[in-house]
Length: 94
Image (cartoon, rainbow, N blue to C red):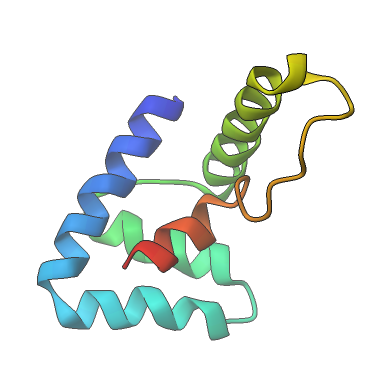
């Protein structure tokens, strides 16, 4: 699942970089009451179906992998800001 979601996000990012309207619509999701819901609606409408839970799970899985790879993954592993938020990472990459 996570590989499919990563690939979909990468393709969506490529498309948004070429399409100013799409880019603005994606960035505007930050102002929505439910930003993840709107982001996923736009993504799906553009041909890249992603659900909110898939996006959240991807962030948590990735963050868990990072924590396991540092200092043996114990409680002393560093807290990495935004590393578990693929939504924010995606938008900052635009």
